[in-house]
Image (cartoon, rainbow, N blue to C red):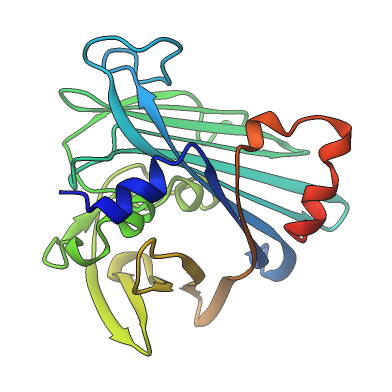
Length: 263
């Protein structure tokens, strides 16, 4: 059940935009870049699983997260975007996830729609990945966790033993799209909540740090992966935040707002 404080914040008609200084591991080196998390509520069509243009019976409210990363690898840039949609009144599973990766070698796209099963579509320029259509048993997802932490942070199920890793991780590492064994824990310290996910078979850890008070802002995260006795760390630290109707700020005279976000 959502508190009145949570409803007032997320149903204000504004989006929350947070920018982060990013250190991204790619090809065995650290790459400096920017990450952005955009949270906003929307009405979702229950059949098409898309944002509604006109409200109708069966629509439901979701908390949408669009997360982006931009960084360069030598001469060429990477652009990563992930989107996840969690029903606001339901601390359960995401309705939809999509992700795309663009760089000069080619593009990859992956989408999950949560219907009777979790229907997954994978498309890639790269032959090893190719084009796939998968049906997965319903499971919790790492992408959806980022939505849950903003509205149900103390209700994360730390007893769950499997989770579907983030689509960014799956595609950057050409990992099979399936749930993997996990250990999840949470600790509270100095008015902060830390959520940790450990994937034993992937030698991967993710730690997300956020404020303990609503709206539970995400302050930083760190991902570590061990390969061939070497540990590679990706991390992001928050530098700016803005609550704004960004979809109405698309004219040239609005460009100064990017300075406010330190972008």
